[in-house]
Length: 199
Ligand SMILES: [Zn+2]
Image (cartoon, rainbow, N blue to C red; front, side, top):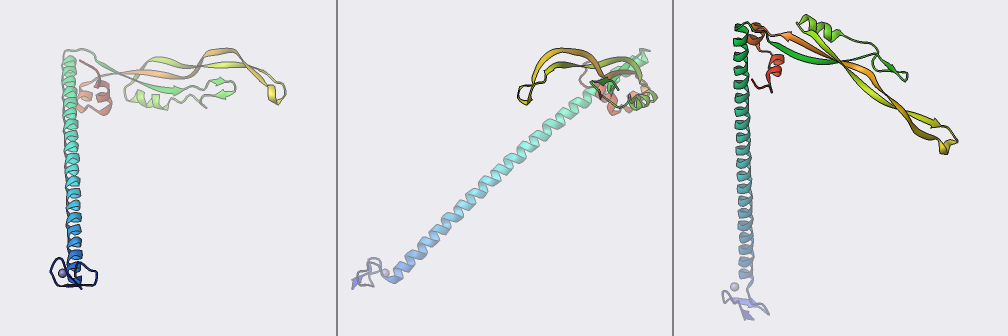
C-alpha cells in the first residue's frame, strides 16, 4: 500500500494518488475546461459585438453620404429651377426635349418588325404639350447568305452581300416649351431633364 503523493493517505496498491484526490483532480480539470470555454465564448461574443458596431458605423456613414448626395442634388435642381424661372421672367423661351421609340411595321424577309405603327404614346404626348421635332429611323443591316444545298453533310453557306438601312422603328424626338407652372410643380420628367446638365 503506497501513500497518496498529494494528501499522504493510503492510495491503494500501485496507485500514487488516492481516489479522493483523483476525483478532486478530475473535477478541477472540468472546472478549468469550463472556465476556458466560457472565456472563448466571451471573446467570440466580444468580436461579434465589435463587428456589429463596425457594420452599424459603416451603414451610418453610407447613410450620411447618401443624404449629403441627396441634398447636393436637390440644391443643384433648385438652383437650376431658379435660373430657368429668371429666364422665363426675362421673356426667354425655354424648351425641354425627350424621345421615345416606336417600332415600324416594315416587312423584311417575310418577318414583320411590328404588327402596326402604334402612335398611342405620341397621341398622349401631344395632349401633354409635346411637339414632334424630329424622327430618326433606327435601321438594321442583314447579311445575305448563298446556300448550296448538297446532301445533308455538305450544305455550303457563304456570304452573299448584305442589305442595310432597313427601318425597324423610329426614335421620335419631341419638345415642349417650359412654363412657370411646370417649374412650380417640378415633376419627375422635368427634373430628369435638368439632371446631368450644367447651367
Ligand atoms: Zn490523496
